Length: 333
Image 1: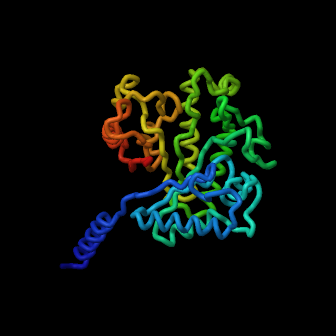
Image 2: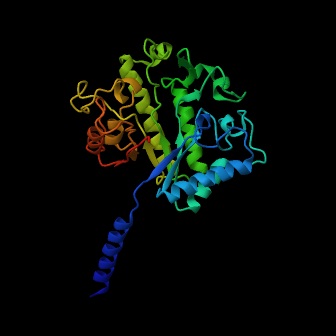
């Protein structure tokens, strides 16, 4: 065998081995908003925070997972030092207050995750800015204080949340700069958004963006304009991530139903009361077709045989509509 054939054979063998050894993506979400998963309480001593996170990683590793998706920006705040947004209240109990003794939680989380051979995907909420306007801690340098014109309140008698208005270009650009800053400074393996673009509809209440629509609508219907706003930020984010580090994956975890078949022949055989396309204004299929995102994690939180959204129906539908992108399934035990 000559050298050329030997190299070709070796190359094919290595490619085959690489394909065979390519790992599955087996991840868990770690939620920080309202201290759901970590830290277990606000204001814990730094060493306790660190040990809690190590314990979570060890548990997930033992259970066979190879990645974690950690929420590092739950409400326009930061689990890392940032010139754009204040420290998270879910760390220290008061938004804007740094950990004492000082450490960088995001750097710590990444190092501990990578030390165990696991991937670290940074989970960001794009537009939620104040979780509960009645009781959340809001620092003087929070974006809602500095640029109140970018935000709207939406809620009911139980809770009102403050959101970036997705129809304001400056708000989109600000969020894009936050993500660009994270990708530039940290060794993350992925950027991950969940299902909160426009918030879930509250019966009898429309999202209060009439003024922005009047200014920026440009002849579109309100629904078209809202979808266009969400498409715009996905394109901006995709571009920013690729410009900084092309190997960092961009993933979205949408609500489990894109559209019902009754609304669109391309939709799933479901009867969901709200859908991505019609209520959250997130046209996931467009993003997948265009290659703006690298993976999708539909939240299929219904059981096999559910009368409105059957798990088997949806898992098959998503597998047939991922357009060559990676499709993982989000579960809620």
